[in-house]
Image (cartoon, rainbow, N blue to C red; front, side, top):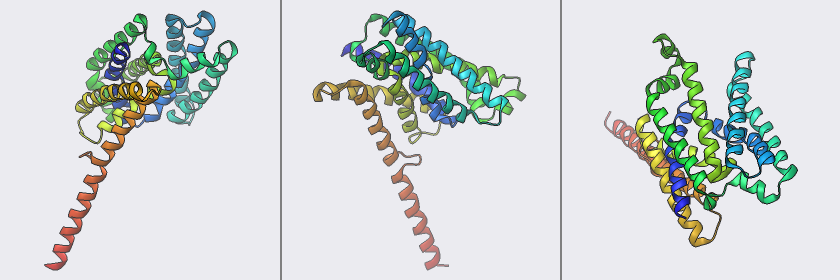
Length: 283
């Protein structure tokens, strides 16, 4: 449980801020696509070296970057938008990865790859997750300003001498690396949950990108802690419990968040009706 908590915290610290930028770029589903893009490489690493951390990590990095490059090339060379090309490659990657794992592995091996083994983290996996998360946070700190500009106005970034494409590639590299490290904790199917749910929840509490990144990381750690406690006392799988805890935080934010939450929208609508009624009563 201590190793699971440490690995989940390390993953949440990096995944949450990355998810914030995916939300800002209106590419929330891209995280899901990239999580499945690494599956064929992980499967190839598993087929060649068994449950080898290094082999599956290298395979996942290679296929994740390859899918990102191919999807970007399709969007640039054809009229198809980038999100549609990512969706196509995501479906192909998912089918190919499951097929490859099923060729030689058992159902337990497939479950390990798809859903992770957060309660079975060893020293090597924990070191990988913490190292990748640390590098990701340092890199995000270095490219924070151009990345925000690239999200909001890439033309302005180009006019100021910044390379939007280079910033975009660095961001994709960080995204793939975090996904590859995170599949050891939550699996390829659920790692995107700890990335997107805290990020989307943070949007309801603050409008600043920097504060959203900090809050997303904090919400991810709270979800990890609550999910592990729930899995321990209720005797349920840990990975789904963590994601469901993050989902509960998201729904709570939707209802009571001060920036666009349902309660705030209801109060604003009531205030508008009251102002309108006063105007009609005293024209």
